Length: 123
Image 1: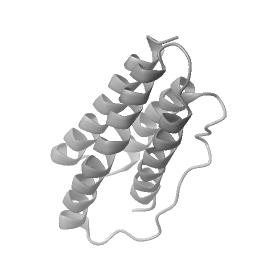
Image 2 (image 1 turned 30 degrees about the vertical axis):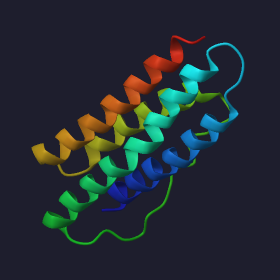
Image 3 (image 1 turned 60 degrees about the vertical axis):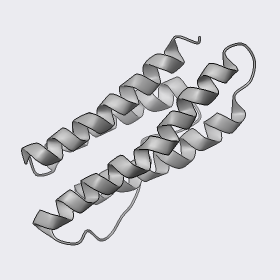
Image 4 (image 1 turned 45 degrees about the vertical axis):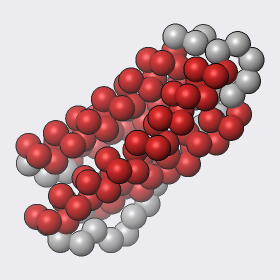
């Protein structure tokens, strides 16, 4: 459960980080970045909530939430989402492999990748 708690804490932290990036957009392409980041921070909480509730239905209440320090915001938003996606893809291997949980993680990865795509094309 510790790995799952770290996954969830990190995904919730990503919502806040995306919101901060959202406020910091400027220059050419800033409206598109502002919109892409807004979509991310508005969507990720519901996806995480669904994942936690599904997990807890089978495995019990999760405690000990924490965030990984491996994902830093100082490399810019594209780098942040690249590292976040790699983190999710790595840590998902250490949590239960129930298909419905993995499918929910797929949807989260889909959101991260889609956001990253929208941001990369602005550079």
